[in-house]
Amino acid sequence: MKNFMKVSPLRLLDMASESRLGPGNLGVLIARAGVGKSACLVHIAFDRIFAGDNLVHVSVNETPDKVASYYDVIFSDMVKALEMPDEEDLRLMVERNRMILAYMKDSFSVERLSKSLRNLEQNLSFKPQTLIVDGLDFDTVSRGLLEDLRGLSTEFNMETWLSALAHRHKNETNQRGIPYPCDKLDDLFEVIIQLAPTADGVYLRLLKDHGHPVSPEASVRLDPNTFLVIPE
Image 1 (cartoon, rainbow, N blue to C red):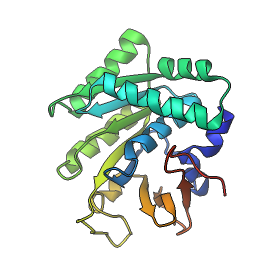
Image 2: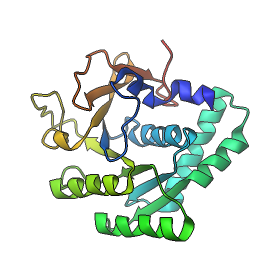
Image 3: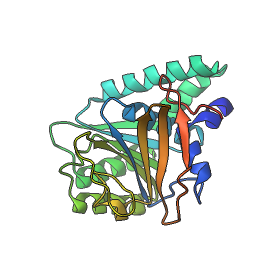
């Protein structure tokens, strides 16, 4: 576990003013299709689980089996890459501390999610400290839905990470340096990070940090196969 925590993508937040996103806050990972957004998001999940959080992974339009299978593949690759000796203990921790909720065919709503979280707490005594929402369409998502998610995060005292799909043909960037599709919604997020491929490799960059100034050098280079941080 210690080996993973040293190379987790969230080591990026070591360069931030605060060490984590924090309860009641929204964070977003922006990336184009095929760059590794889902793998990076799963590594964020592992980071929080191995730090002791209970985590709920919400998938929009993917089945629970497919999400669980994706976790298994990334976990196996991570164990092999880091030569982790405690594989079974870590796998058990993931299974015990993670719940997967899936909403198919545009059935997702914050109200339904709230009911699901209450059911988990009341029936299984499972209360998450971290929520991941993967698959929301940021081309059409409403400000109201994101505001409701932030309210839900405050109500349940959890931090919430989302993914946002960027597009090659949409290059809008606001005056604060936040690109589409979050350029008009950045005030709703306390932390914004971007997964960006370059000629030198794949970088995870910090674009917003709880309202504090962000250094242009606040980035980590990721292994394009494992999406773990490459130590400098």
